[in-house]
Amino acid sequence: MSNRGVEKQDSTTVGIQKLRSSAKIPTYGSVGAAGADLYACLEEAIKIPAGQTVLVPTGIAIQLPEYTVGLIYARSGLATKANLAPANKVGVIDRDYRGEIFVPLHNHGQTQQIIERHDRIAQLVVTPYIQAEFLELESLDETIRGIGGFGSTGKK
Image 1 (spheres, rainbow, N blue to C red):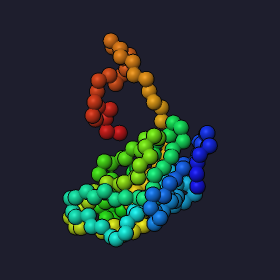
Image 2: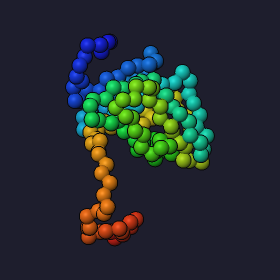
Image 3: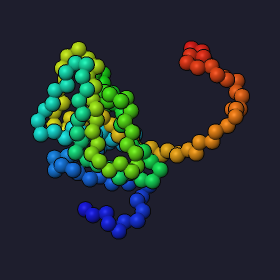
């Protein structure tokens, strides 16, 4: 499907391009799910040794609406049952990126894990963002918290 001549993308529509015929379009697991599952696009299974990271292809590229970002998070089941999670903790897909989405899966466990074709490997959350303008100041407004850092607000 061509997108030539399309001037404005709907604010809830994410354009998807399959870069490989075997790629799967992201899907939501339930009506209220915030994250859409991303699938491994593999010709054959890959092994992720304990303590190692492997880039897993999804076979897709996306076109995000204006002022949105794609955030890639771990799937809770994969993280708890197989000790696999994105190596960079949260992946950021900028609106102007058009390349293939890869998920760097890290094996935090003690045993090798195997990813099969079309396994769900991560979840994609599309969310709005603000691109801030940074203004250098001589000083910042004072607050009750002040410069208190890590753990300074108590354990409640």
